Structures are given as C-alpha cells and as structure tokens.
Length: 346
Image 1 (cartoon, rainbow, N blue to C red):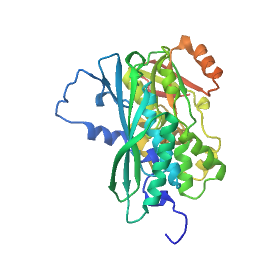
Image 2 (cartoon, rainbow, N blue to C red):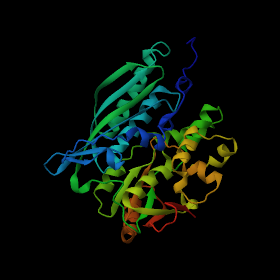
Image 3 (cartoon, rainbow, N blue to C red):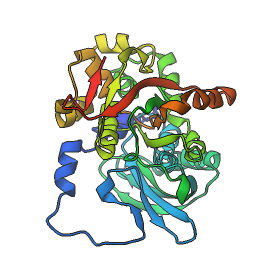
Image 4 (spheres, rainbow, N blue to C red):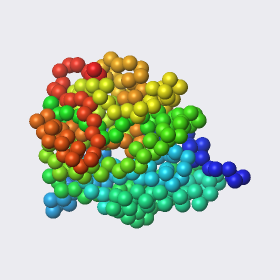
C-alpha cells in the first residue's frame, strides 16, 4: 500500500444501503410458486415486507431476528464498522424491540486489503454494540472481491409492544427522527466534493443508534414504525402505506434534510440507487420536482425512524420527546386510499 492511507470506498462499486437491490427486482427474487411453510409462531415473516422477522416465544415475548450488511460508505475502517453495525441494529429498534446479541458478517478481499484494516472494522462494530448494550459474540468471514460488513442481530420484545410497518391507521401523523441526505453526501465523497464539515455531520447521523424505537414500542399512540434505509423515504413510506391500506400526504417543506443538500445537488451528486428506487415505485407517487425526487428517493444508510402516531396523541407525543431532549420532525399524515396516488407531495 506504499504507506498511503487506505480509502475503503475505492474498493467497492456501491456504498452503504445504496448497494441494496431495487424494490422491483427484489419482488422478482422473493416471488415463488412454492407455497411457504406455515409456522403459527411466526408473527412477522417475509410476506410482511417489514424490518425483521418476529417469532412468538410462547411466554408473552417474541424474538426479533434480522441481518444487514453492505459495502463501505466511508473510507475509515473503524467508522465503516460503526455505521454498518448501527444500521443493522436499527431493524430491532424499528420493531419496538431491545437488541440482545449480534453476530458479525465479514467479506474481505485478502489479496487487496491487509487484515489489520478488517480488525479496525470489527473494533468499530464492537464500539457500537457496546453502546447498544449487546455483545458482538462471533460471526463468519469469507474471502470476497469487495469489502463487505454487517451484523445478524437478535432482539426481544413484549408482544404487546411489537411495532410493524403495516398497522398504521387513517389520520396518523408521520414523524422522522433523522434528516435525509446521507446518500447524496456519500456520493459527493466518492467524487471528492464533500466538505469536511458535512463529512462530520453525515457520520454523526449514521452512527447514532435508533434507541428511540425501544421507547416508541411502549407507546400505544405509535401505530406503525419502520426505519428509512436503502429504498429512501418514499420507498419505505410506500411499504407502510400498502401494508396499512392507506395513502400519505407529505409536506415537502417540513421534511428534515441536511442543510447543504442544495449545493451537492447542483454539483450532480446523485447516487445510482436513487434512480433505481424511483424506477421501482415512482408510479405510486404524485407529481414532484426533480429536486424533490432526488431527496425523497435518496437511499439512506442507518437512517431515522419513520413513525405513525395517532392524531389525537400527537401533542403528548411531541411533548414527551421534547422533555427528553429528542428532536422530531412532523412531515405529513396518512389518509384512506381514494384513487389518488399512494403518496402525494404538497
């Protein structure tokens, strides 16, 4: 490596959750004429398009099981481990659960990158797991053409606190706990256009755990929840709407975004995953500008929680978050499907 710093993003063709297979292609992969095996204990499975699988343990609690992994979205190995781990653990929080155990998934190009770099990835992962109060207990590794890292995570939840992305009700207000823009900023980084202050902002967002999900799980007023990752806000909102039999109205000027996005959009910093996302679900969305599309379909890595809250409880919900020092962003509402687009932007 001749002593020069190793930049992990130079060794991968994609970045973070932008590597995800598009929703349209994923539908083809998951479709099968074979009848799935029925398991009465399976509360949430692949048919629900939710964030994790959930198995009834028979004692009032359920096991949440999920896995998530991707290629580097930052150059620093330690930070890559932190981001990938926060992203994987988020799926447990998105179900209202408490993470309890993690197993590592590592693919490493041993002919291109030294093992000491992979060690830093694991150290970053252990730091985030410790922050979540869990142990990185083991894992599996392979020799791989590109660096890949993530976790398989198990969690527990009281079944009455389980949150899904298919249980929202009409008139719920929609909240998002992190601003959008990580995909755009990561593309700017690969192009060498990312300003140092924005690199710090993006990193802080991606390594922040969605621990609020465990709190939201205990609130009856939270009717549905998911996290916003590779399919962008519009993609994950589409899944929530279709699962709940509702449509959504988004007030674009209330959508939280990272402050510098207009600058990077002017520089043409659009992730390839944005167009793949749009090709999959753009027909479900009402008219919007090109700029709005690039923001709302931007693939997020370790993004925030999208929460549907009963309208009559919104004031108390917001007060509770404010009193605990948490930020929240109300950006729209849900309504019955009435023949209009699944998602309308106003």
